[in-house]
Amino acid sequence: MLARSLLLPTVLAAAAARPASAFLPRTSVLAAAASFTASKKFTSISNTALAMSGKPISIIVEADIKPERLDEFLELIQKNAEGSRKEPGCQRFDVLRSQDDPNKFFFYEVYDDADAVAHHKTQPHFDLWSKFKESEGINASVSKKAFGEFMT
Picture 1 (cartoon, rainbow, N blue to C red):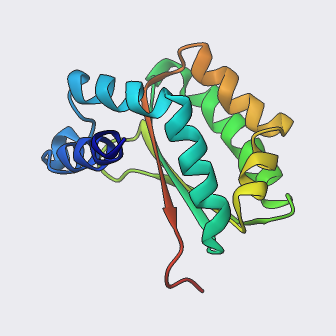
Picture 2: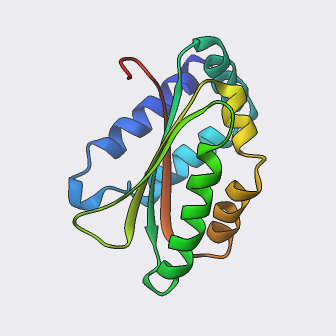
Picture 3: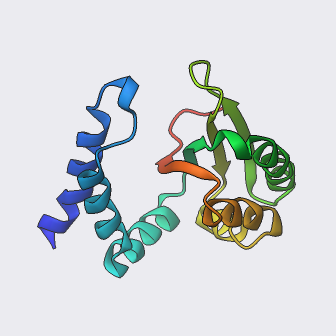
C-alpha cells in the first residue's frame, strides 16, 4: 500500500518536471497515472481525504481543443461556467485562454467541499463538457485537484 501511495506523487512530479512547451506528460507517465487513479482504493482514499480536509477544493483543468470544434466548445463551456457558478457550494468557475495557444484553455474551479464537487458532476451543464470530451472534441485534457490554503 505504501508503494502505491508514493506512485501518484512520483508520476505527477515527473509530469511537472517537463518543459513548459511540453506540458502534457509522456504517454507512459499518463498510462501509469491513469492506472493508479483508476484503482478503487485510490479513489476512495482521495475522496475521503477531500471530505475530511475542511478546506475548499480547487480543480484546475487544462484542455487542448481541436481547432475545428472551437466554436462548439466556446458555446458549451460558457453554459458550463454560468451553470456551475449558480450551484450551491461553487465559489468560482473561471475559464482562461492561453496566450500562447488559442486552442488551449484552463478552467479554475473552487468548491466548498467534496459534496459540492460531487453535486457539480451530476449537473446537465457538466454533462455538456463530458459529452464533448467523449465525442473527441479535445486533443488532450488534464485535471488536477488541490486544497485551498490562502484564498480570498
